[in-house]
Length: 145
Length: 77
Image (cartoon, rainbow over all chains, first blue to last red; front, side, top):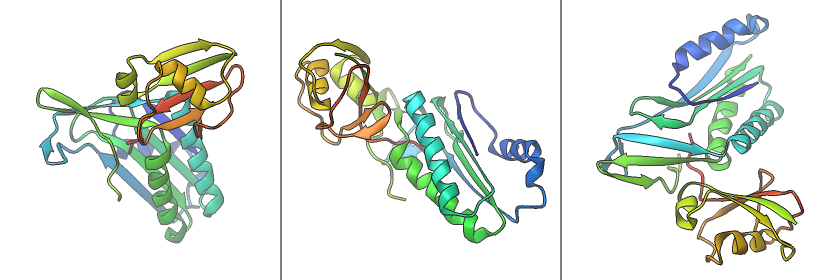
C-alpha cells in the first residue's frame, strides 16, 4: 500500500512499472491490475481552461488517502494499492491522479479501484483553481461520476 | 486554551487569512473557533470542518492544542 503526493509532473505508466519492479513478491500472484488515471482537461463548465493549481491540506490529505487505501484492503481481497496525486501547478494533459489495485482476480480489483477514486473525491482535501483567460476560479464541486 | 486554525482555498480568500493562532478562554466548540478566528463572519454554505484532520461539525467540542481547519467542498482527483 503506497500513497504519494507529488509537486511535479509524473508518468503514470512508468510509475506502475516502477512499483511492480519494486515489489518482486507480487510477481506471479496477481492476475488483475485495475487502474484509474485522472488527467487535466483543457475545458470545464463551458470554458477553455489554460492551467490549474491544486491546493491541499498536506497532512490531512496523506492521512485520509492512507485510510481510504486501508479500507479498500479490508473490503476486498487485494494484494496491493498505489495512489499518486499531484498538487501545485498543473497543465492540460498532465496526469492528476494515478490509482492502481493489484489482486488475483478482477472481481476484487475493479470495485476496489472504483472505491479509491470515489472516496478520494469526497474525502481527500484537495481544491482546484482553474485559470480561464485572465481570470481564476475555484472549482466548487466534483462531477458526480 | 490554545487552538491552531487553518483556512483553505476559497474560504481562505473569503476570510483573508490562512492561519490563526487562537489563545482564548471562551472557546468550547468548533463554532466558537470559527466565530473568533473569522472575525464574526457568517458560516459559509457547504463549509467543511476538520478537527485534528478528522471531519467534524460546528457543534463539536475542541480542546487545548487542537488544530481546527475550515474549507470548501473538496475537488481532487
